[in-house]
Image (cartoon, rainbow, N blue to C red; front, side, top):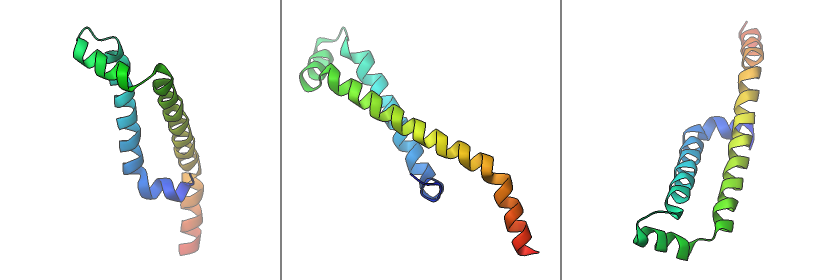
Amino acid sequence: MDEEFVLENIKDLMKCLTKSNVTLRWLILHKNSSMKKIKGIINEGLKLKDILSLLLITSKFEGKLIKCLEDLILSKEGRLNEDKATCV
């Protein structure tokens, strides 16, 4: 994931991250639901290993996105000065 890609797709990347986190939260909360129907559907279709895998993948994605955004913010002033020098 490079800076240009992040800048061009930030809206979609943030949507993806939000949906992943919401899905994880929902699965974890409902895995031990008192509602037998929901609990049955989740426990039949997913194993704990699948939820943990999604958690790890989501956290890696979030970490990479945050790192890239931090780098962009830190380099913002330098880029602005370069562009100003180019315009003058």
